[in-house]
Amino acid sequence: MIKIDGREISKKIRFGLKNKIDILSNDHSVIPGLAVILVGDDPASKVYVGMKEKAFHKLGLVSETFRLSADVKLDEILQLINNLNNDNKFHGILVQLPLPDHLDSLEVIKAIDPKKDADGLHPENLGNMILDIEAPLPCTPHGILMLLKYYNIETNGKHVVVIGRSNIVGKPIANLLSKKAKFGNATVTVCHSRTKKLQYFVKQADIVIASIGKAELIDASFIKKGAVVIDVGVNRVEDLSLEKGYKLVGDVNYAEVSKIASAITPVPGGVGPMTISMLIYNTVYLAEQSII
Ligand code: NAP
Figure 1 (cartoon, rainbow, N blue to C red):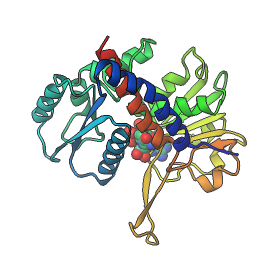
Figure 2: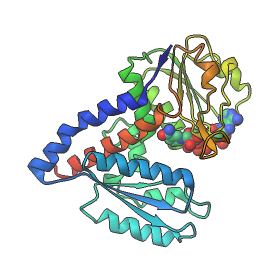
Figure 3: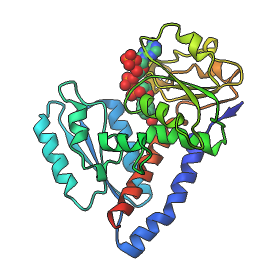
Figure 4: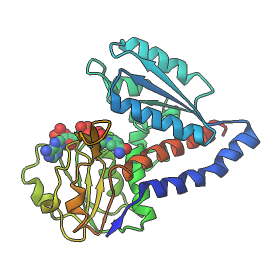
């Protein structure tokens, strides 16, 4: 069984970006910059934003977080995004999701200049993705593709079952893996909360991608022997033996599934670091595009 090490691959990807960052800085006086908009006090979002900022600073990149209160009005966010769209210091803008219920995340994402869309979630860039036009890809799905690539996991002709149909993970990864491309060409089944006989579908998968948000829902009974399992979920479950009072687990029961899978991502240390690496990748790409 191979433990797919997202931290290790992330290091390689970030190291590989150093040359591009040096060229931008030395030859063009450009330091790739990311503006992050964080709305409210959600503890998990705060942790993710902190991790993103740290990763950017470690590479000498600009990362600035704009914190807004949970009851902020839509107009105020749109005004901030408009300002950031026109601020040359920032090549990428990211709105940390989810947003509080009173805010329509699509309205907010649509306000980002597609040329500064660090998360690749603007409708124009999602359209580009579907049409094979070069554009920033959504970070988590792109990170999953990179894991498959680095571990040389064949997707051609394989049956992939994606559990979850979110705009940020499920829908784009299903599209990317079904493309006529290397690390595509898979037959993809998308399951969701209305799927009847979830276990029946998942059990047929050569590759399972779980993006559900339900702690350890997928146990060994769902998995075909030798399947590759990519666990996107990050769930907090109570653990009073730890000082913080909780631990992070995925959507997959790692202890059980790792005994029958041929390869599996752990949580933490699997998909999570890759999402941040692809955010850096996109920001560097957008900075490069800004000088063409
Ligand atoms: P989301 O928008 O909440 O979507 C969850 C999907 O799972 C929905 O399509 C939902 O179906 C489906 N679902 C829910 N319960 C189900 C069940 N019992 N059986 C089958 N399908 C079910 O979530 P998301 O944004 O994709 O995130 C999912 C998880 O991944 C979360 O834990 C999140 O924190 C994590 N995440 C991690 C990263 C990372 O970098 N590691 C990045 C993004 C997300 P319906 O569509 O029918 O509601």
